Image (cartoon, rainbow, N blue to C red; front, side):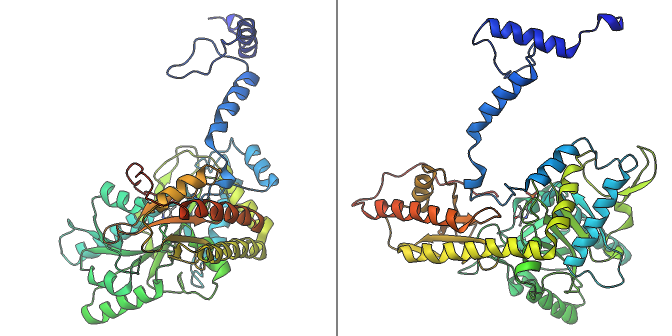
Length: 463
Ligand SMILES: *Cc1c(COP(=O)(O)O)cnc(C)c1O
């Protein structure tokens, strides 16, 4: 086809939108297949933006850990840099430089040992970061077993059963036996004693969570490490730790600076966090950092020269946007340490305020108080049979609040809770509005004289 015969896409869009305007009601968004004719950008924008109103209001979503508000400058910078491909470090060397600066900043925040070169990278989120951290553990373990002339076909990984689903994914995808230590009694996460009891010479590592997605509690990283030190002294087994700091990695350094959960603990070899949770960036960016170059096996690193230039990379995917990494750098530069501390402290204060006020309403019992992550879970007191936490969740949804209800894993499946995640942008005023609605709904439930008709099955929880 000659160049002059080609259809000008703008003209084509104008024509088809004119056609559409002549036939009211014809403008429809495609559902199952690519439409023969398109529509103008303006029309498509209008229709899609309208359809997306059904998604609900992100600011009323108290279920998600993921950032739902960024300052306007950050949003502008992200839009300006949407065309940058993170993997193409040759074409976008300055974006790569900002990533390297973020790695240094985060390593420093996590007390990486003096004299070590920060080793780490950005990822699409904590799930990918966990895959990379856990792969490094598997590789190191295999090296050690081979050197000792021992079999390498039965690796296992020890975590609490309260871990996020990405750990189970890692185990299934990479053929590692998951040793999910059940929660027990009132301890709803991994303890030192139980972790050690599940370790043997095939254990590639112990993963501790800071903090648990179920209730916002921190697992006792230092105690688990001490118990593993003791195990090593008794048996010679040297088992490394990874900390899944998806949320806590950007909370603890600011809200609990004296808590030793990071590279101050020598047994902690790697840590991940989600930039798009308390790192305060829109999805998706995550980080994984190793304590030293030695903790990351060389043969996991690929030297990419595909796009010109040689670059070491360790990632599961290839192309992805550079704008999230740039936005992370923007947040570090614009907030600084004081700014992050203020934002996280505010979330922590609001979470603890909400928890204390909810406890006062009467029928609720707090499982956690929002004093670790700005996240807490609460349940109904024993003896309340006319309604459940699932009813409360449904009722709050009528007012637009998304407060999920779910059941704990194995061993504590009797425990169903509601959980509130407080993020930047949840003010004391908003908290008061939520409390007013919760008090009002609770009054209704408390006035019931008989149990509500049972709703459908309780939902499974997988976040
Ligand atoms: C959210 C979360 C993950 C998964 O993180 P993504 O960034 O959503 O991939 C893993 N672990 C924990 C503890 C989490 O809270």
